[in-house]
Length: 177
Image (cartoon, rainbow, N blue to C red; front, side, top):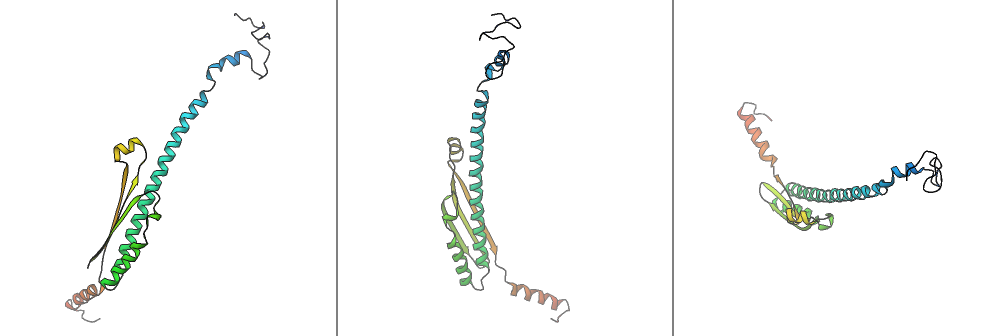
């Protein structure tokens, strides 16, 4: 149907008249193919945003668990280094190690620890596994991320060091304390 400016349109009104929504027929035809396009774009965008937020949240849980394991290993090794005798050092390290529980972790499972108190070093290590959801992640990483941490502290005996320094001082001629 060929329209003439000022003529009668489809709805029985002229092209210059407005309908109930305030738009002319010409304006309505311009946007006729765009109805719902924002809804489709938003649904795709929100799916990607939710996926990214979930990935960031899982990464934060994994990093939290690694930090807790590392701090616990450091604390147990430091407690085992601060004792006077071998028995006191071992008891302090074991006590700190027993305080670590799986309840402090947000997502890791299978918590296991190892503590070694020797004459010169104290070593504590923790191991846990963090489950990874999703098909692709399970295919690439076997479904689990490993959270392995360890910490070693060398036991320093200051008495031996002080005697060595005093002995060197006497040899160099400054034999007085």
